[in-house]
Image 1 (tube, one colour):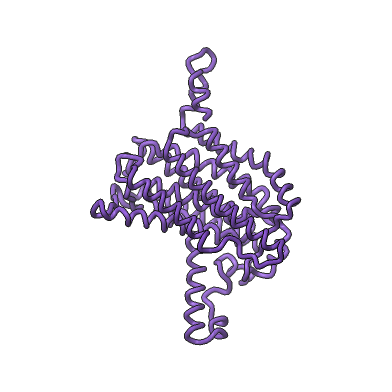
Image 2: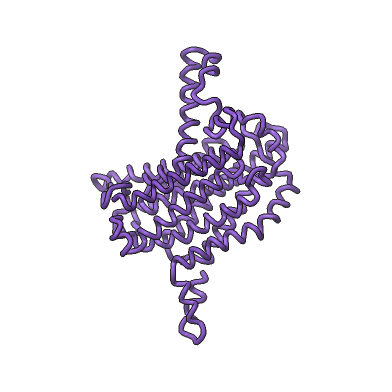
Amino acid sequence: MLNYLLVPFVGLPHFGFLRLFQWITFRAAGAAVTALLLTFVVGPGIMRRLRRMRLHQVIREGTPDAHQQKGRTPTMGGLIILGATLISTLLWAKLDNRYVLLAMVSMAWMGAIGFWDDYLKLKQKLAGKKNTGLVEKYKLAGQVTLGFALGYYLWKHPLSSLPGASTTLPFYKYILIVPLSAGLGWVYVLFVTFVMTGTSNAVNVTDGLDGLAAGLTAIAALTFAFYAYVVGRVDASQYLYVYYLRGAGELTVFCTAVLGACIGFLWYNTHPAEVFMGDTGSLALGGALASVAILLKSEFLLVLVGAVFVAEMVSVILQRFVFKYRKRRYGIEYAREHRVFRRAPLHHHFEVKGWDEAQVVVRFWIIGVLFAFIALSTLKLR
């Protein structure tokens, strides 16, 4: 928005500096700083409101006993992240760019699903009922609907000269995976739906320790910001042997807005947390990361960038599958004594092993940084 308002004054005397708003790097930095400052401005007010409404965290079943005291900590702080990201993007990004608009819509849609889920959980808690939140099938239906709609739109309305129903592979130069025929475009749509649903749920599962999900998302957002800038420039994409996506560079602004919002939220969310993001924040962040990866045709790169998220989700799936198998074959007592992990998701496994919560968080951040470097190295290794 600021680009449209200020750039027309470039030709006037003493206003030449406004041409800075034409540069993605300047606007990306501005988006990050704006989002960070917005969390400081609106964060305290939202937290006070949440406390007055007694919107406290609902502790998940199976969480270690040390977390029970967190039931008095307000949740739905994801509203801070969501608001800071979207407002900052509206200010600094070019709003006629379809990449940015689709990413914003995806984040807002997932945030709305998470908000409704959080609201129902808290309403049920106050009523003395079981905290089930939004019925799982309805929650999944909302995620699948977004993934399906995004995949179908990209298939029928490509954003670049590349086929809409296509993706790329990391480490390989100019390898484009497309359906064998136009009629198999639905395979791509289902693939996008899987990526969107899986990523949003993976971030949601990871949000179990103070600062864990926000810190890992900040790392992933910074990684994708760099990647978006590269594929959005003709010279950089040619030099690094990646496909050029005209207009994709504008996603750099959106990614840095997510980065700034997550860093600002960590001010309140680091151990001991003053507020939790809840499903409002975790689903929104998952939707943001998934949409960026899909729009940049780098869904497989997301496995590296979000390696910790993937590990957390796999730990839950593996734990449940093995437990049900052993329960059916050997009985429930045997299944309980022979779990794959002491507790799932994975971060709780290390807590039970004796790691302090802050240790788990920081060490997972370090792993996230390591895999971010590996993901970025794929650009040069092509």
